[in-house]
Length: 244
Image (cartoon, rainbow, N blue to C red; front, side):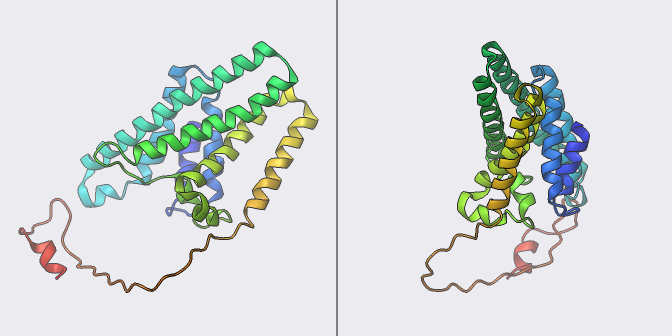
């Protein structure tokens, strides 16, 4: 499931541009690590991260060669592995707490707490990988896969982090309902799923945020078509001269 989940996340990027694959991929990744032991969560995160990042930034090898591609992929996979570890620990801990109470209220609290916690961890991973090391690498966010989806307008209200959190929360809620269906019962499980579906549909009607305009700006862009690959034969200053 971890491999399929990682590939699903990649299928939602410009490689294939099928945005629903991101939600399916996130569900598969989360289901694979849900309530598992930390070591297994770490492994699932690493496998899912490799399945996503290696093909997602494979274009890098065309311009810089395999070493930078593998190096950057390794760092991104490490972030994903860390997420898997912490998410497994968190979901398992919340489930144990809920079982100790063994009440309907505790089960409902679990249905609320697990998706919110995992969505927060997902966003935290994206934010951290976007800032460290060396300024980070902000590719591969869940929000980026929603560019062609009905949820795209939410980014103008919530930003990339907020939209990623919303999508991750929906995926995590789906997994939570699968794992708690027996304790919740059929009616409550269907009820939670129906409410989530209604909220998702309602969010597709949200329009983009508008800002008051104050003048205009004219922007010019130049593509110098320079030889910029790491092994290209070029002299110092060639790239600058191509753009002047």
